[in-house]
Length: 113
Length: 113
Image (cartoon, rainbow over all chains, first blue to last red):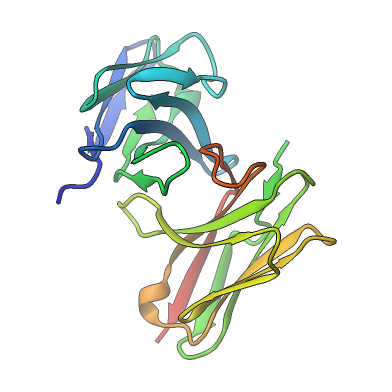
C-alpha cells in the first residue's frame, strides 16, 4: 500500500515567488496534518484538517501561508510570497482519525534563495 | 519558547551498547508522550509511547521511562544496532489521544559498528 505521497521532494525558488506543496494522504484516512521542520524549532504543526475541513490553523505562521483540501485525496500548502526564512522541510501526515497514529510522508525540502 | 526540549543534538554509541536519548518538558499539563524515529529522506515514524499514568513502557529493545516530577523522559535502546542510526524526536500532548503533538528538535543517533 502506498503511504502518504508528497510532491515535489525538493523545491528551490527565489524570494517573492509562489510555492505550492502537494500531498496525497493514505486512502481512508480522514485526518490530514501539515508540519514544518527546522533545526531551531523541530517539528511544528501548521494546520490540521478533518474530513477535508480545516479544524486548527493556529500554527500557520503568517497570512502568506494558506492550505486547502478540496477532496479526501489531495491537499496543498501554498506560500505566497515566499521568503528565505521559509526554508525548511515540510511534512504532510495523515491518520484514520484525529486521535490515531499519524503517518508521515517523505517531506518536501524547500529552499528559498 | 520550546515546551519540549532535546538538549543533545547528537549522540554516538557503539554497536551492542545502550543508547539513552533524553527529553525534557515544561508544561505540566502534558500527559501523553511519544517517540518518533526519522531516517534521511523519509518522514518520521512512530516508535513508542507512554501515558502519564505509567513510568515505563517497553517494546522489544526500546524502553521509554517517564519521570513526572522531573518532567523528564528518556528512550533506552538495548542493544543498539547500526540500523538504529536515525534522528529521534520526542513529542508530548496535553490530552491522551489528541492530534496536537508538541515535538522537540530531535537527537541524531549514530550507532558505530
